[in-house]
Amino acid sequence: MQLDSKDRELLNLIQTAFPVSPTPYADLGHALGMSEDEVLARLARLKEGKVIRRLGGIFDSRRLGYKGTLCAMRVPEERVDEVAEVVNSYLEVTHNYLRDHSYNMWFTALALSEDRLQEILDEIKTRTGIEEIITLPARKIYKIEVKFNVSEVQDADGRD
Image (tube, rainbow, N blue to C red; front, side, top):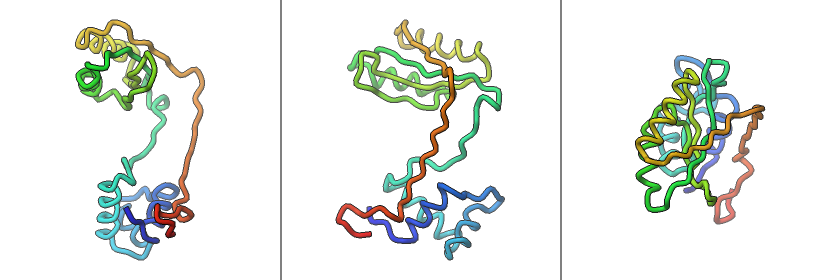
């Protein structure tokens, strides 16, 4: 996917200064010299082109009262899709991914209480028949803030 200079400016801006206002896309357009419709069209194209996976806020779930944990399961290769469908059916599951490890399915879950979190894990065990789910709650939180300066990135053909 080819990115022009306006795409790059937009990508940099949404990472560093997304407006918190009733009209954020119009505000982005104003800052970039384009219309709200053009901003929305560019974002849709960037998402469709898989440059953007998602666009949304990041909240501190602990401050909002949530309890969370990282979980790991051993899932037979032939059951990965089936088990992933069960795990992903819970709104409380925020990420689910495969790893090249004996514990090959890892997911994170957030719930409003420890009881609800345990209920979800118990239901996953029952629905999948996989009895062992390792839970790895965070002991210390590290905030890694990564911003990609896409103005300095060249396209695959070497063009800016």
